[in-house]
View 1 (spheres, rainbow, N blue to C red):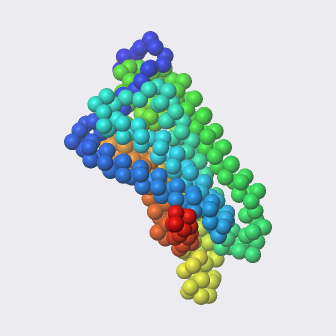
View 2: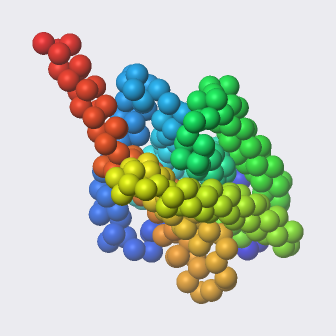
View 3: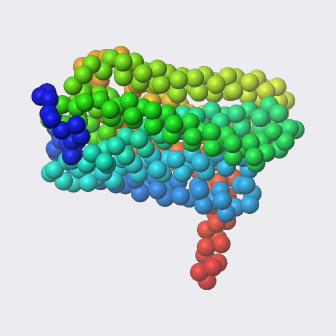
Length: 313
């Protein structure tokens, strides 16, 4: 790389999947369909949770936050990705890159905090059922949700400033389909060891610590469920946690494998695949998991559809 005089580039080239041009049309179709499914699924959960009085509970309040987060998460990357897949000039403006970097970091960190909050809600519901309405009051739910968003956006502000203040060397080519910290660090003209160490520390903090809290919560939940005498009661208790456990496995498994993987020749392509999974596929699967495995959501959706058809008549 050669140094340049400009401190701020006008645009970046996103290589994405340009090394496999024969795949681009297929990827465009797949990502477009995934994006439509993501929008429909997450909007459905938000509308059903807000319009159905039977779902006005802390569990569905946090689920609404997760769906809103997933909507913003995938929208921060997929439209630009689709444009670049359809175009021969695969670029993103500097301002667009900064916005994408900040939003992606903020929403990723927010989800890392929100998922253990949701596990805490399930812990209280199963382990302290008689005190659930007292503990999980509306004010506490709002505070927990606000803390998740504020923590995520504060972390993104810090990491974005640390990354964007580095001097960059041209050509401004990112071997990725989005603006992420590791890809931007490779363009730096200076040693980025400190930045990489900070990224590793933040990844540990936002991935392993919440994941540990979730494991602890579910250890208590499992112990409480096993004490239930009836098989039907145990099945119902596990049923309320199954969807959340699947979402946790998808999110933390892919995120941890990306940021904590040891360096290797295949890390570049593996990083792209993992980013695709937790940035595009996971937001699409989350609403499907919650709707297909959750009887309450399916029944609420049927009631909503019945109301819509009655209004049309």
